[in-house]
Length: 205
Image (cartoon, rainbow, N blue to C red):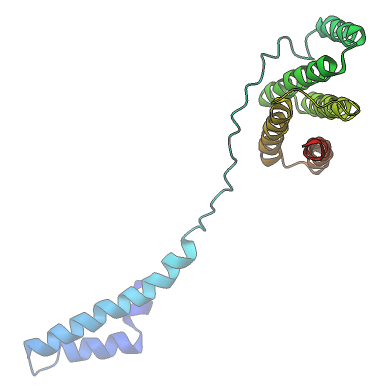
């Protein structure tokens, strides 16, 4: 590589002028300057090609919303007992507002489980739990829609809206960390349920 550069016509010409018999220092300085510029131009394109592109990731806004402690996860052998208890409480709750809040609580716990399972690399169970979380979230909002003419308590819709945003934040983070096409499609369907819940909340305001 070094010999090829030395044998280039421009390099040879500069070398001949530099070693000329006139001996003027000004000519030597000028030749040295152009020699440096020429070498720099040879090296710069190579460096530019080797430089990796800089990617700026899209920032995800952190939603200020508290998620409850999920307790035992669906992969625990006694989880079915917890599920039975929750179903009994739902069945015995007659007040629609309280039932809606209960569904929201279960949805929040399940989305926290979804995140925990994903971090443990139990991907399929995580997606199943995420689907149930958004189903409970959508159910909780649909109950509010059925309240006839009575309006929900003050601040309740804002809480539901924040919950939707928090759920979407977690699901989006999971979406970014997965590269499987089937899992991405499953996540897209789960996020659609989240968006439907958000639209229903907007219609109530």
